[in-house]
Length: 212
Image 1: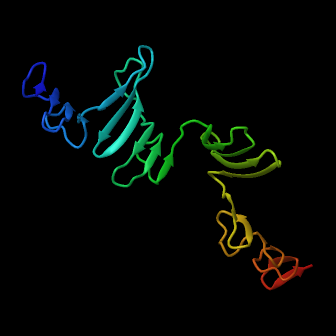
Image 2 (image 1 turned 45 degrees about the horizontal axis):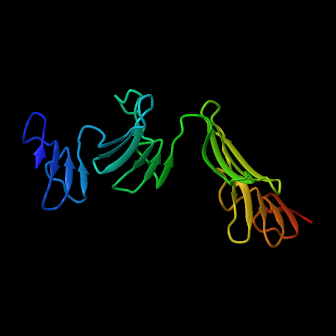
């Protein structure tokens, strides 16, 4: 049974008695009990009543998008709030074209990622300021009063902390991995070397060492 306001053969609401499937916008409902089809707009809209934006869902080309509409419900927002790309499985928040398994895009200067315990004792926060071009990553333990904060600017090299094995290396972002500025190993602390010869070693120039 297919119903349509103007054209009996057009896709309005279709009931398939053999399968029990229902179709909206399609004369061939399949796969699930309810199939909603549209090639020009959202297939599903959730409304909380007058005065509120609607949430809409759309399958476009095999990709899944969630977005909000204007309060009037006449158009969707320009950016998808949540996108899942069928061909790659990439998930985008704030972007319709995620380039990695999880891609979060913010157009404001508040935190892009924030992980926080209920009592706010521990948090991880990533922030990028579009105006100043400064990005910052904070890892904070408020109970033990410990903090790791890394900050970089678009026009300057950043800073990196690496921990290969039991060693800890500090260096600039553009420094070769084998030449960290500061290294802490089981043998000691090295400046300009990953192989301190004593508890504290400074490798100032080639073949020049100061050990203590």
